[in-house]
Length: 95
Image (cartoon, rainbow, N blue to C red):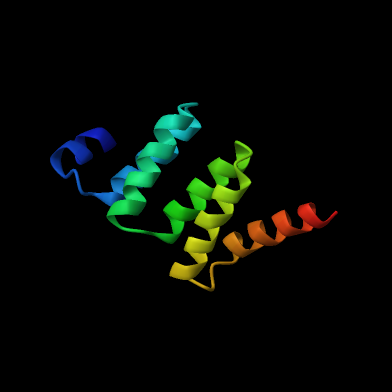
């Protein structure tokens, strides 16, 4: 369904973001990262930035993760999940 939506509307950032989530949940991490990056390039969203940051963090790519969480906060300074992840990362770095 998502692929069909993207086929019909290749600039649908929300469909690409959702496809990235599906890819991640089905073990296709590289495809998930590509889909989320495309979504963010088309139309940056808090959710896409946060989700990409989380995937990168799980992969141990913490500096990249932090950059996407910071981008999520730039888009919405009230988005506490991204701030919580950054704070947790800082806490782990200082201990």
